[in-house]
Image 1 (cartoon, helix red, strand yellow):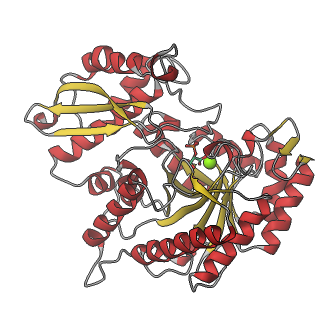
Image 2 (cartoon, rainbow, N blue to C red):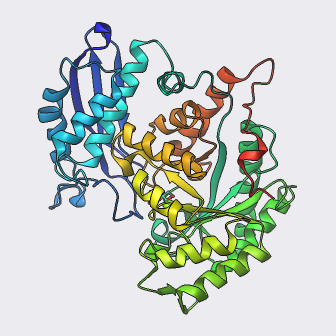
Amino acid sequence: MSNSKIKSTRARRVWDSRGRPTVEVEITLRYGATGRAIAPAGASVGTGEALDLRDGGKAFGGFGVETAIDAVNGEIAGLLKGRVATDQAAIDKALIALDGTANKSRLGGNALIATSLACAHAGAASERLPLWRYLATSAGIEEPKYLPLPEVQIFGGGVHAGGRVDIQDFMVIATGAASFAQALEWTADVYRAAGQLMADDGKLQGVADEGGFWPAFERNEEALETLVRAIEAAGLEPGRDMAISLDLAASEFGGKGKYKLIRDGRELNSDDWSGQLVDWIERYPIVSVEDPLAEGDKEGMVRFTWAVGKKVQVVGDDFLVTGAERIRAAARDGACNAVLIKPNQAGTLTETKAALDAATKAGFGAIVSARSGETEDTSIVHLGVGWGITQLKVGSITRGERTAKWNEGLRIAEAISEDDDKDGPLPPVSAFPWAR
Ligand code: 2PG
Ligand code: MG
């Protein structure tokens, strides 16, 4: 116990994948163990998220994090000194009370999540356990048995690609893969095939924020067509081996009952936009749809879930913002059947776990997710494995801040795989009723 008492808490400015500063927190325990974590940052941000505190002004284009860093090095360091790092719930509770606001805007959601995660890392180090095993043990899960199923971006759009297409994420899920390693292998085949097809068609413009291709498509649907062609070109069967998943991030182009698709030159009301999505679901092997309606369009979300929720995964991201109370309300209303779990939306590890528990209780699926602004931090992969979350979304399969996560999954796979199967078992198929 006394081994895990906190000696010091220190924050520093580090850099994220968009060239913006972010907060890293390092916690040192009395007997030398340390834990470190970095806050990520979103671009399509739900209004209910913990606030990512930025300094504003001229320096760093307004994205400076000196206020958040000062909060950690001052008030937060004072609060944590002498506390037991393994007592995560008490530490998170104290952090929330110290901040004192509903959206963590005083000390900053970025300061709090980096501190909360660093504390978990330090706790794990003090027990000489990898974080995934430490989290499992703390949550009363005896032995993690599987890796989460990867959901991987092939094309970026929306606010991650200057609005080049309206839809934000065109992703694939290797629903037919036998292991975590095989899912990544197939996905990389599709990624390279998509790049080749686009180069051949003269549609390649580089990569978007999460490493997916930044496409020069004329219409949103062209991305779906190209994705199917890419899956086939990789020698896989669309809908069986490899399915399509979309994050519409609809709050970015819709709201107040209107959805404006600039690329398609159309403005639709909520029902017609839903109808368009249902039409795509019928014509393409789409198995998962995230934020199909704007975060304020609850009625639309309920109607959409009612229409397709038996067949596809309907995921709330901006709509649920990793909030236990929102998840419970959505389950009562019949909006969504799955939730994206992003620790920095909640602001502390304990609140993140509460959201996951609410989802499990509601019978919702769960996907642990990175943000569009990321770093080499791999905490979310450990959360995924340790807490038995069945899906993982970290952007594309290129760029270091993304491969850091996939590659960490491969390392953990070796540790949890029994016998000679070192490729990483995936959750049982019953976890994915929508995988046709
Ligand atoms: C999302 C994420 C990741 P952002 O919307 O799910 O793709 O994007 O971090 O910008 O919210
Ligand atoms: Mg999203």
